[in-house]
Image (cartoon, rainbow, N blue to C red; front, side):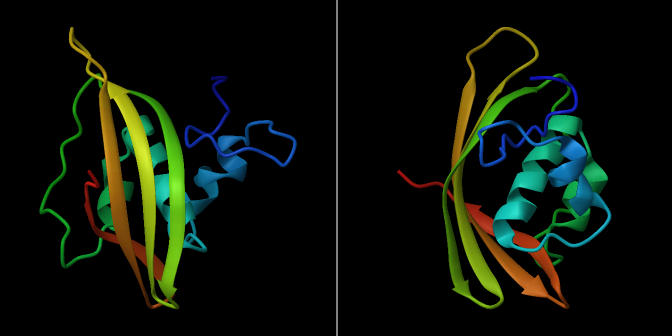
Length: 132
């Protein structure tokens, strides 16, 4: 992936990757417009090692006191499987994210159905479960 492509994998209508600044990068400075955009920006934050952004976009009721990212973890890709609007302030995003640890060992596959809530005009990651 070229350095300026967005890690989340979102593309233009013609299938060309979006640049980070035109995709997830803009949500670092302003609220994401929907839960899927927030989820994608959070994936990009994991790729870029941006723990402060992850903390800021995690709902205070479920946010851990601190967040330590695994050093050297390499993110391999994101597939958004579904985005479901529950109501005006609640949504779910199902995704699969793949990663590989820094040292020897197999790649990991994270399949999650994440729940999001909107408060005061901002979307937050609330929690998630792992479908079978």
